[in-house]
Length: 149
Image (cartoon, rainbow, N blue to C red; front, side, top):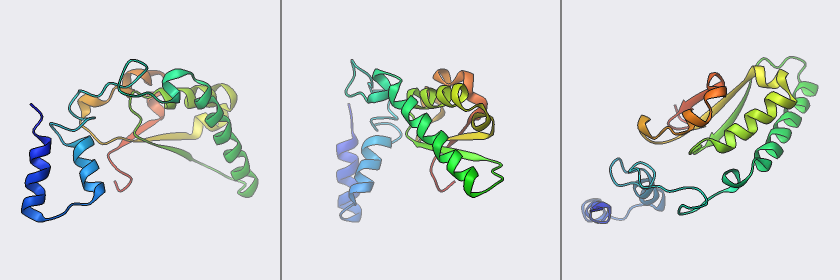
């Protein structure tokens, strides 16, 4: 039984109105009943929803080429770039990161070598499906719980 509605109602009864951001935080990331943290999330063609990376790697390839171009512009403006980071909010199973990193490794190995791919993912360690998908690139990945860490 999902007690999240009662938890939210109790919080409102106790503290007054909550922001939409707080509501969404609870709905998505409550440790026991949140959509993403409870283990009930079904993402993909047969799930509750799917995104472009679930369908085809083309979106990640396009973003990889965009990131390469941003790097080229950066090196034109600054003769020495020693590091470069890509930040993805909510990597889920890691399909987008995989497509981007595959593209960069194939098309711009210089950038790939210096790149750090930051995954901002709220949740517990058992919900890190991206580690399986990204095993080939795991040395490029740094996971954070928020942008504030």
